[in-house]
Every structure is written in C-alpha cells, then in structure tokens.
Image 1: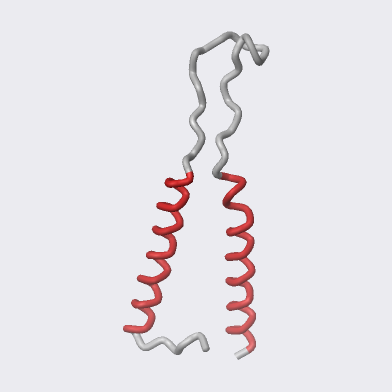
Image 2: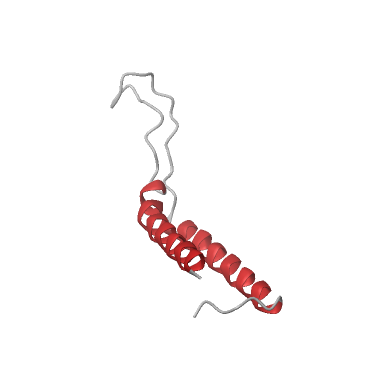
Length: 82
C-alpha cells in the first residue's frame, strides 16, 4: 500500500511541477535578429507569441485525456484513489 501512496504523491508532485513550468514555456522565444535591434540583417520575419487561447486548448486536451483514462480505469474495475 505504501508503494501506491508514494506513486500517487509522485504524480501529484509532477503535476504541480508541470503547472509551474508550463507557463514559462508558452512565451514566444527570441529568434530572428533585425538590423535595428540586433546584430543580424533585417529578415522581416516577426515572431508570434503563443496566444492564451492555445494554452487553454492544450489544457483542455490534457484534462480530457485524464478524464478518459479515469473512465477507462473505472470500467476495468480499478480501485478508487480515495
């Protein structure tokens, strides 16, 4: 029973870490240098940041996937997490 509790606490810890780290990964990265603001030639290409709507779509997909896995586990007769 302790292995299950350890595994559950590990999953919770990884989920919290993901929730903390994911927002910093969704910002647009600096990529193309311009002659005005950087050392390279002006390429005319502008980076587009990942919009907040995209983040919500990704989060909804993850939540839906977890829900489907939960339904699958309940249908197979897995014990509850309580």
